[in-house]
Length: 323
Image (cartoon, rainbow, N blue to C red):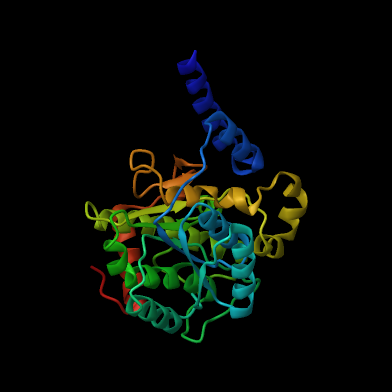
């Protein structure tokens, strides 16, 4: 009977994922949590860094990590908002995270922060690349990059590479990048990586960067086998956050009753910080504690060569020589 129930649960899980709405919404999260009897995560002794930690998914992840016993490093762009979030988490969790200020859209800011962090001798077991933007209009950074691409791809790429030596010192180093179900609609245009030849579309530009995150996680993982760290990309499902509500007000209005809470959206990333290797194979794309397909539309597929080319492009643009 137990075997039959297990098979039924797995079939139900796959069916919800294929149907999208139940799988991506709070319906899927709550059903899976019950069907698979998810247990709380305990991360005592693990040092975890979360970017974009002052609101939304990042703040929810930082709070859950603190409650789970982890030493939490919050990376925020705005000091005032970061301090307010840190103090709130400290009150709720009973332990105060460490706050760091860094603008992921600025490569100079990333370099300064990473150098200071390494010089301080801080331990680091897990990096959660969560910070992201979807601006309503095309913007360029002071360094000349399209803002969505700079914040969602180049900044996290550079930060990960600059912190790699510290992550390798961990017995169980991991890098988790928060992607999105939006990446299912997009491939990555290696001929026009910043989409300079297209009219600006917030959702299309965002989706391309989210596809890039999945590609880079797979490429990183292949480059660091077997010595680690291990790399993952994750899909939070449709979670209500300030950024989503502002960028997609119509979507929020229509689906509001079934959207996930930020805590539900952050659950898989927190779980990946300590999941057993057999449950969390590297290089995979996760949603609700389970590896999911990386493609739904044939035209969005990428190859090993595409992933390598994207990696090398990011290395050139950020001015680093990867391991």
